[in-house]
Structure formats: C-alpha cells, structure tokens
Amino acid sequence: MKENDMKNTSKTDWARIDAMTDEEIDTSDVPPLTDEFFSKAKLRLPNPSNTTVSVEVDTETLEWFRKQGESASQQMSAALKIYAAAHKYSG
Image (cartoon, rainbow, N blue to C red; front, side):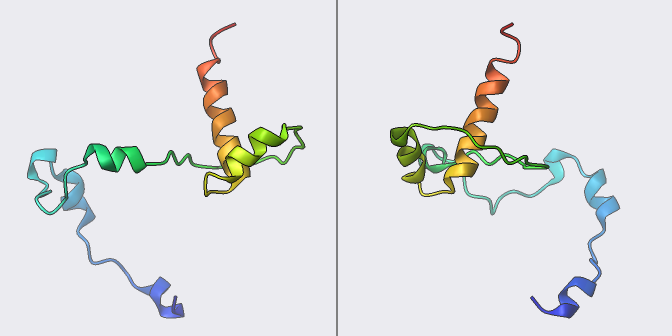
C-alpha cells in the first residue's frame, strides 16, 4: 500500500446511498448464493478483545483443529464462543 492511498477522500455520495431503499439498489451483478457457496462458507466472528489463557486440550482434539486449515487457536476460540452462547440461558 502506498502512503498516499490513505489520504484519498471518497467521492461517494454517502447521504444518497443511505437514503436508498433495498429495492433501489442494483444487485444484478451479484451472483446467487448457492448451496455450494454455503457448504464452503466459514464462520468469522469479530474479535474485539482477547485474553490469553492456557487450557489443556487432548491431542486428538487439537490435531483436528489444526487440520482444518485455519489457525487452531482462532477456531477453538470460535467454538468456545458458540458453545457458551448456546448454553447461556441453560442455568
């Protein structure tokens, strides 16, 4: 990235864009989202802040996460977050 790239000012009329309804937005160039797309989709959660902890994980589980092709720690964090949210109201 060049230094001047961050100094460019957008020429987009954001007020006009914000005033548009969904029906006024031209999405004709957006391809349809197929079952194949969703079968390959991966959950990406925002990560506003992290705390580093040590957790004992069995070898088989750790290896499974490592084989997923992503950072094992990020994937485990996402899995824990989903688990916690699913059990939030279960007493």
